[in-house]
Image (cartoon, rainbow, N blue to C red):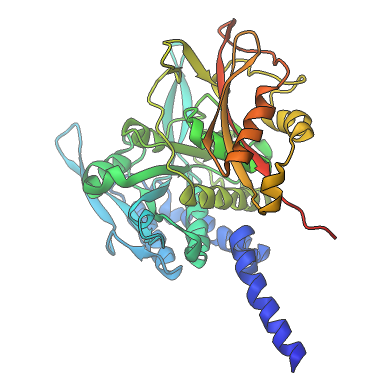
Amino acid sequence: MKKTVFLFILVALVLPLRAQYQTPYSYLDDSEAVSSMKQHVRSLSARMLEGRGAGTEGEAEAASYVTDRLREAGVDILSGTDGDIFGLRQENGDTLTSRNVIGFIQGFDKTLKNKYIVIGARLDNMSPGSITVDGVEKQRFFPGANGNASGLAMMLELASRLKTNSLLLRRSVLFVAFGSSSNSYAGAWYFLNRSFASDVENIDAMINLDMLGTGSSGFYAYTSSNPDLNVLVTTLEGTLQPVKPKLVSEEPYASDHRVFYASEIPSIFFTSGKYPEHNTEKDTESIIQYDYMERELEYIYNYTISLVNGPKPIFNASSELSKKKESGEVVFPYYDCDRKPTFLGSNDPKVFLQKWVYQYLRYPDSAVRNGIQGRVLVDFIIDEKGKVTDVKVLKGVDPDLDDEAVRVISASPDWKPGIIRGERVKAEISLYVEFRLQKKK
């Protein structure tokens, strides 16, 4: 009897820790995840849904499919059975009818549950591509069965996992399938300026999912170089992940995140990038690499959990992505440099942490005695000569830990400075310094 009680207590203690600190594979095994995504992609790229532009029957069928799958996952639907319908005035004076689908998961935090993270994907199947006109390359949208079946499949699978683990969500989460994206992102505009206009100031950030699942060709994250969203990417790089996106300063292609950025809402765009089938009308479901897609899903899930539960990201409004300090000198974000600052020959901040910070970090005795641990977020500037300056704590844990993190970074050897347009510049970066106590064996 004693063994039985002990085993029950052990299971009761372990399961909550697995739910909080690991990906939710205890709830949905790998084969089921792949099977679910295959079903979504194949359904959304079926022949009857091809050409599902604004106002078409294919769009209505796709909206119905997304609505049904969200309901099955236990997600509340805010857009009604037929979707959140809106009209588009055409050049000939006719009105074209399109729709969004909106799902909702309530957060648990008494304050943050009234703040939102939007996870969006294009509902139409018009794929961005390019054509050359008079020698000039221009972006256009082309029909294609996998226009964004993969992005919608990813959103639906994320919704299912987040609903399963909803007790972990401090903020609330909105899932939006945007109609008529190929018409100047009309669905995203309508959502922000009509459907959710009264509460738009409470949207803290947006995650855009557009054409994923071809990870062998690359997996990218674009944030318009938002420092706070970049910090989250950098932080996750230091943890065990099945795949990691490459932060890019150049937008892979335009999508619904642009409308959120125009409304000064921090946004991150996850994509596998362009591929040749964008410019054809043939079925492209076969190019999806589901093993890569599942890895991308796990990473985006982990990123979403960090974003939903972390501090509100600050919007960086400058189109040149530069910031002015009180002195009036221009300081560029680290990731905006044409050539990023390098430490010991590497522009990966993890190298600085591993080869300098954690080599010379001293755990304060007072913190050891009191069992204090955590991550200190430190901001600093690498000036035109490569010297580390203006070291400060953005998010502290304990005064002694904070001071030690500042001390070791301030003592850094010189870096090679960042370069923009051939000139050396001041570059600013924020890093987490982790203090972790280990139990004696």
